[in-house]
Amino acid sequence: MTEATSAATKGKGEPKLWTRELVLIILVNLCVFTNHIMSLSTFPFYIQSLGGTEAVAGICAAAFSFVAVIIRPFVGWWLDNGVRRAALIAGLVLMGLAPLGYVFVPVLSVAIAVRMLHGVGLSFSNSTTATVASDVICRPRFAEGMGYFGMATALASAIAPALGLSLMEGFGFNALYAVAAAIAGLGLVLFAFVRAPKVDVPKKKLDLRTIINRDSLPATVTMLVFMFTFGALENFVAIFAAESSLPSGSIYFLVMSGMLLLVRITLGKLVDQRGEAFFVYSCNAAMLVAFLLLAFVPNAVTYILSAVLAGYAFGGLEPSLQSMAVHTSTEETRGSANSTFLCGYDIGYGLGGGIAGSLITGLGYSAMWSIVSLACVLSVIVYVTWARHSDTSFSKMLAKR
Image: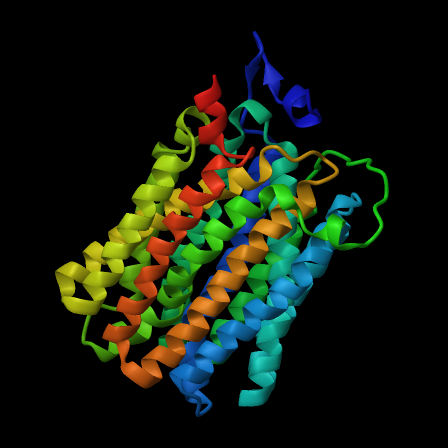
């Protein structure tokens, strides 16, 4: 029995899910993603204000994710050596400093460089919050607990775009980024009260075997391909809406996040009970339809329906696959398992944003939504041919029982 399991058991062996530490790390993660997403959803507008195009905004998204991918494996190695607190403090400090860089040096080339620094901060921050959550969630309810942990992403996705766009439109970019920096500071304050289990593990040497977790690769690659769609959506749906006379992008994110939150509250136990396959198939199908609606019949009704489908897709798939990637890991490999999975998240997100920006510039929005939607088909193919047969698959383990 792991430390998290033994510490989180009460009564007649009933596993206790909600603990003080889980609540606090969810709140810290909410701060991380509010800072990240309120900057993300408004960044293409900021780039335009500096004279850039959608293609430049796509390059920024790719650069952000590229740096995150380079840094994450080393963060995972650091976490696997037992370092938790210093890693998260470093990440939150960087996430607070980066928005201030946008304020004080509003130059296009500098904005790209500072955006990359922001990516480093996110790598440290959400790799660590996910690992601390993995430390404190009891094993029998692990997928359910990770689903609740992911509610921070859902809430941030609901709050942050509306907050960011409102601040941008009402007060300008300086106010927007000052608030983003303050939210990172709040995350630091909350983390000061987290008493996560002390992890005492043998020190690992830095090599490829310790920074890339092979057991998490099937879930990681499945998520990577799916994230092409989410990278395109989060970077460009607000500008698409503005240029197509559709409701505000903040409404899209609000509807999407409401559905995402509903899925994680109501369906969080299904992965523990039935495996991840249902979500892989249904969520990819939902995102495919969401993109095709934007591509071929963009009106107010289909726009809202697309947001509902996208919320279900990301709300169900991301925690399912992250649980699959991490649930068989130990204290000695939990950091690399989380960082490997999040590397896939970043690669897919960055490539999706970069490719989408180039497609918009060359072919327009309709072609972009159509082409990027094919990533959903490829994600299912990766899962069917590889991931569902891996030893980390919940569905495979349940089928053996």
